[in-house]
Image (tube, rainbow, N blue to C red):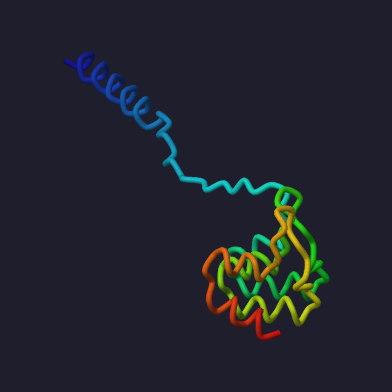
Amino acid sequence: MKKSIIACSLLLSVVATSIASEKKPLPIKKINVTTIKNVSPLSIAVAKGDYGTTASFLAYGADSNEKSVSTGMTPLMYAARYNNVKLLKLLISNGADTTLKSKIGYTALGYAKLSKASEAVAFLQSI
């Protein structure tokens, strides 16, 4: 009987140790990846409508007239396209040129009209 109890104890401890030492899989986390190429961080901040980040970039000397490589759009064109008058005012006050054209020949006003961004159109026509 003693041998049975000792054998059962050993078996139980081996099984318990085996179960406890198994690695549990880590939970799967979703990772969002943004693959925007050849667009300046300032233009991305403007396209997302992030006023604080845009103001910070400009305060640290980002070029408000820098064109994206692929489309030739400036941050001002992105602000006009997404009807963001607050960012239009910020960019213009920091030296953004309203007369620059993209690779397809549109100015910021042209993008505002193309996107039916009525507030941006009204603001750009008023300056």
